[in-house]
Amino acid sequence: MKRLLIIGFTLSFLFAEHKHWSSRSAYVLPEKRIEIGLFQPLRMGVSGRKEWAIHPVYFFVMPNVSLKKSLPAKYGFAVASRHSIIYPTPLLNILARKGTGGLISSEFTFPAMGLFNNEILLTRKLKAFNITMKAGFVIGISPEPLAKESTLDLPIVYHRLAPLYNGWGLRTGIDLGGRLANRIQFLADLDLHITPKQMDLFAIEHKGMLIWEKSERLRISLGYKLVYGKYPFGTAIHLLPYLPMLETWAPFVDMEWAWDR
Amino acid sequence: MNIKKQLSFQVFILGFILILGCDPIVETYNESESAIYYSATEIIEAENPPENKIKVMTWNIRFACGRIPFFGDACGDRVILTEEEVLANLDSVASRISQETPDIILLQEVDRSSKRTGYLDQIQYLLDHTYFNYGAYATIWKAQFIPSDGLGRMDMGNVILSKWPLENAERIKLPLREDQPGIVQYFYLRRSILKVQVKIPGQDNFYAVNIHATAFATDDTKQKHVDTYLETLQALADEGAVFVTGGDLNSLPPGADSTDFCMEDFCDGDSYHTINADPLHKDGSYFENFENEPSILQPLYDLYHPAISLTRYLDSESGFFTHAPSTSDRNNTYYDRKLDYLFTNIDNGWVVESEKTHQDFKFISDHMAVSAVLELP
Image 1 (tube, chains in turn purple, orange):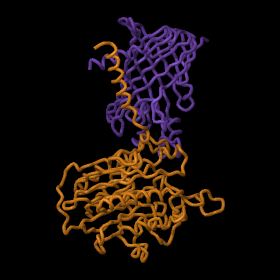
Image 2 (tube, helix red, strand yellow):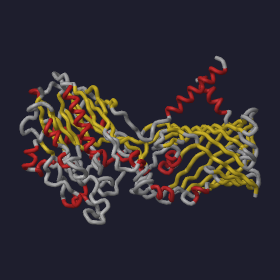
Image 3 (cartoon, each protein chain N blue to C red):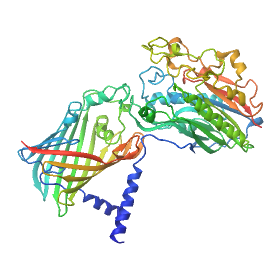
Image 4 (cartoon, each protein chain N blue to C red):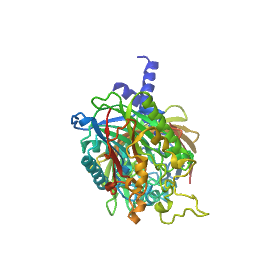
């Protein structure tokens, strides 16, 4: 156990945060700063106390918006609340089709429904790293009960959609970051998704990233995600991204750009 | 522990954790592998076979789908069955098996962790809802996720259930179809033969062999499957083993009066047998895709003893039909061809007139079971 803790601590050093770049912390982007990534949302700092974000890639098939709002600091912690709304219906109905690419059976049609995510973030800067703790809940609202057979039983996706079937879910997690060198940072997080009530589900997700900050305008990251969770077929562990046919894991690569309005 | 050793240990532990997560999306196999063993929750000690005779059955149970219009083989829209549907169909399967009381049963298309059947382990369910004690399983289709038609996770295969203990259970790989694009082939079925030694009291070297050959290949894959099957049986015979074998061969008996069921099986909007039709024939409904396909099973009839002789079959074909897809429901036709067989290498092993084609099972699966009584040496 002690050794595993050492590993965790070692990994935790992987995450740090440049003062200009957004992160999963309680800090919000400076006013007028805008960031976007290949797989990251478009984020925009407003008035130094608010940060709006949307995922533009998904927006037209899964409208979404998120607001992070800075709150007064407490006990040495920066504090923020984050609220998001996701409307997954169009995307799910696109995926529910016949033939190749049909991830959900075309037997199912999804009604207009939404996910409402609310969480509190607490961040503290320690000597060598930042630590962010977060906790919140998700409300899933659907006008009619969804067929339990219509779930998309894939890592990451399944547990995020579970509140639509269950009505609600809980989220908590911790992010740790640190700077390895002038332009190199590491980031590690551990998130717990719980969907209680009739579904009795959980997922533990861990992400590790190495980030190279070329400048205040461009950064490139690569990393992995490890997901251990309970699904309708039992528990499973997945290391992502995983390449079918090549049967191998490969690191994900992301690029982010930033500019000021 | 110095820093270097500590780091090495951490890397080892982390690597081990990561490897755990590296299950392939699609399971691939060696030529021969151990099959998976099962046992009933409650073991009922089996008696010696009375008069040295055992009853054997083969049945493709269509993953407890009954006659539901499944998308893949019945022109239907259904992909994911409800728990109630699966349990009702599986109870019907268990009930019919318990009525017929075979000592050994060869099952095809049995799901054990598939999205389409609610991830129910049908092998364990059948063991716990019949009198069988032991089972062996060899997958023919296993994938963490199939990104087509909403199929999702899949684990389907061949099963042998027995009253007596099973040993040396082996999964023998059958060649893949070669008439498909690579990405389709990757996610498609990887068929197999299941071979297992059955420890029947008084029998030192008795085997059961179960096959489910390709249904939809339009090239000579079926010939390769039958060739591998014959090699497997020959190897057993060469070892001095006695065996009962069978399954869903997806082939017609030599001399069958029709080899073309395209017009019986078509879906609404399909067009076959016309100049512009592409394909010209419906996959799985046409049995002359390559030279000699109509007589592909002749070597089996020549080398081994069928539960239903060819002469008997040809005298009255319709009484021995075992299959018609659910598309034929519209004509109230539930069986119009024979695809399911039992053979043995025991001379005069089949008890005369013990064989039965269970056409009364027509609503439980799109295949009818075949059973017969075998007198052991």
